[in-house]
Length: 198
Image (cartoon, rainbow, N blue to C red; front, side, top):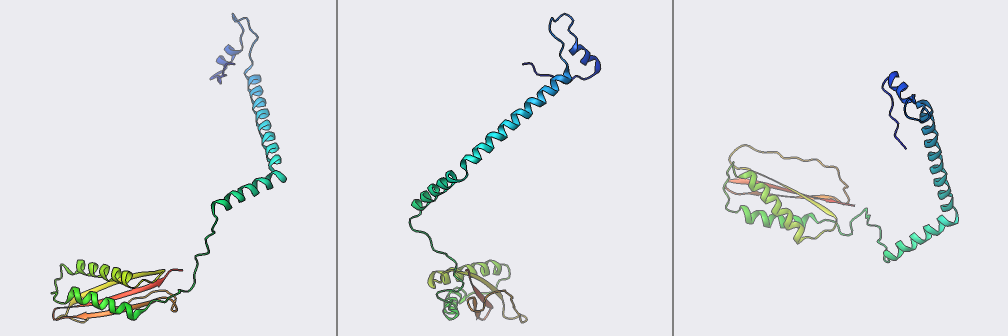
């Protein structure tokens, strides 16, 4: 079957309908367009009817049997179901005293003979915060606690410094520990937060 092209003008339409020299019946573009639309509509309805019949077949008993088979297959995959992991309160609460002892040991070991250097202190503070955080995680294993640590370093000879922080947490499960170190050249304030993840 030849594909029909939409004529660009009236002259092209007349040429399409003329039978001069072809020996065939004239083709009316309007009639062809109507026939194609009717054919598409029949095809669409037939597809819809087929889909409706298939959905009816799957309804009722057939659908229940499919669901029971899939449930049985899933149960065989998961023989030991996993319990709910949500725990609103920790089994063992975080000990701020133990964390402070670990912080004190790490900070004093690192900064015992350190001198204040304004250019190197930012890298030293980050490194010290990472060391304290990893030491607390490794030595004091508290499940489900997120450990956050920050360290402030400054010179002893200049003016005073006031540090403060704010947080939203659960007072029964979350806590913090702090340790302040001071030698002849610098001071270090180390604060560690332990936030419980439910």
